[in-house]
Image (cartoon, rainbow, N blue to C red; front, side):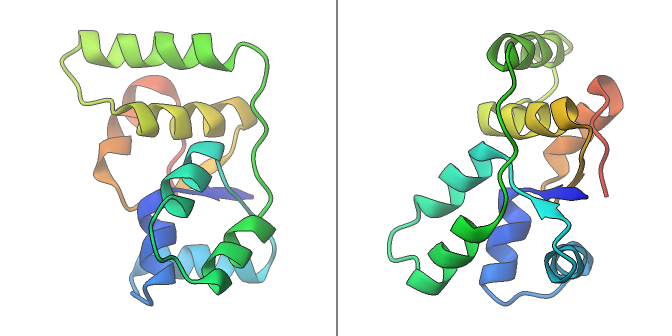
Length: 124
């Protein structure tokens, strides 16, 4: 199983091809992909998103938010920010969802490297 970040999912929907999109496509074909809740929000909020894309996203299994999620996410983000590292709120929520479920993340966004290096996030 693997989870997907917003950048990779958007690139897939736009028909772009790169290694991350191909990994997502393979996970999609084998029904081994899950979506963090923050990715759902980031992608579905785009105006004029075609209904076919909305249907695809809504059909993907979503990672559950586990008890204590918000506090763990806050602590993780505080730790990164205190080191002077970039930790956007949405990236923090995506990373925490994956860490909580021990899921690897297919990520096109390089900002996730801090979560991998310092917080235990596994990147594909």
